[in-house]
Length: 321
Image 1 (cartoon, rainbow, N blue to C red):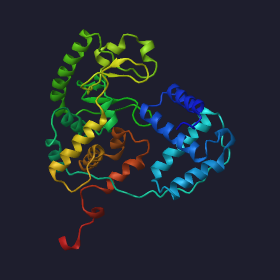
Image 2: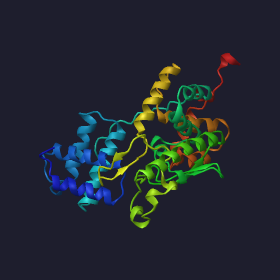
Image 3: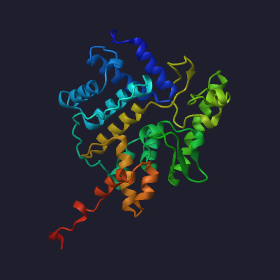
Image 4: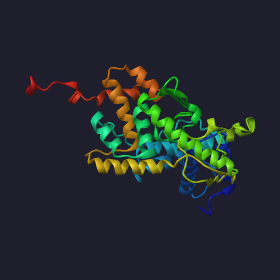
């Protein structure tokens, strides 16, 4: 990385921060931009254009055999470099060889299978997984939940800044209200101890820390699922209790799936797939499911109609007639 033009990389980093991109997106974009520059022997992007972009994307598709989503991710990062950082418009249409997009159906658990996996989890991990399944949350949406986003009166959860920087409401299962209240009582006790020790400040998105200087130590802004340890913010150096790391739930779900002995590839996202499919099975219309999931296009939600528990394409076998 020593040969990469550090001034350009720093400019990219500052632009990502200014545009309020998430930490994960920042890391991803910086990684792809570094790779793109190295591929072209650290040639400055101001002297590059359509042909260099297509050459790198073709390399990813042909030589590296990356997936379509990975190629698109790299493409987005490179366009961010040219359009947003450098202000350099690529006027000609970029038409690389597209990585093949496989048509995979999502893995879905039956209702009994979902219960079995959830019963193999414990404590905070079980509560988080129940929210993934019961509310259709993405992993990071669950991890980023703040106390103020859980509405026990209306039995709903406000998902802020979800995928595509969109807010949406989803359901809070009534069966989770009591365990969630008990969990938040423990979290509040820890929060009060942090305050007594001169801590208790939480990360605030964008410029809210400047606009509302006292909000960082307000109970309503605390994470629903905080980390067990205090950590240091790499950007500001402040000591804070951040949210729980997503990998802890990922590992717990993997262990639970192994314990349940189900012959399916089960991840945290499998609960979200199951949430959508089971709602459709229960007769809810697809537009409602689309809103709860936060899908921009109903076509994305339509995939769950292909995995409903009705046999192959909902056709009745002649053997069963």
